Image (cartoon, rainbow, N blue to C red; front, side, top):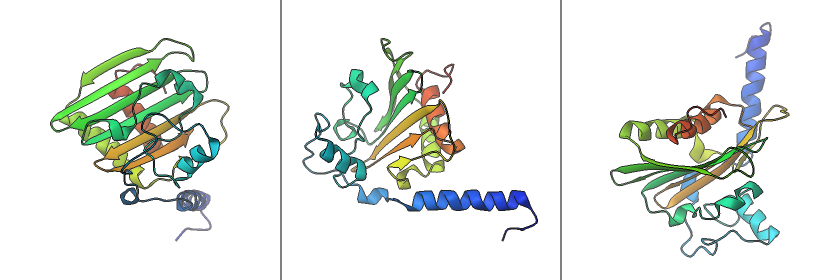
Length: 210
């Protein structure tokens, strides 16, 4: 119950209701997102817009969201279904002024790795990085994924505010034969921003601001 005499209580109730409605629009459980047996898009995403839109809407099961144009230089990035590992997450980040990065974190048996390509500007050459991570690092990424309720989010999560700059973040995940992907447009919840911040930290970009 909110106290009508308390404006902060009323504001909190309105905020909670706004987020509840926002997530109820297209909430998809990860258990429904099983990898297709013979995915036709393992090599590249389809060019025809109506097929790409069907992937975006979830009508065609695909572990990749349609990548934005700034990822044209990252065509070597395989879809998650082609990556050897028990569990893998990929973070695709782009800033309004051209800075962007692709960070992949995965676990294969006892080995946990991070690989990333970081572009300081839209047309910059990538700075590449690869390293082994610890079980503690893996626990941190799993905790951040759980805190954001990633596996139950809709494909697209929009901001509640209005921003003149900022960043977009795409998070793709595969756990065994299940997958999920969500696009965050200027994430304004701390749990979503923490996903990007942690990926940057583990990807050797701790000194770079989101």
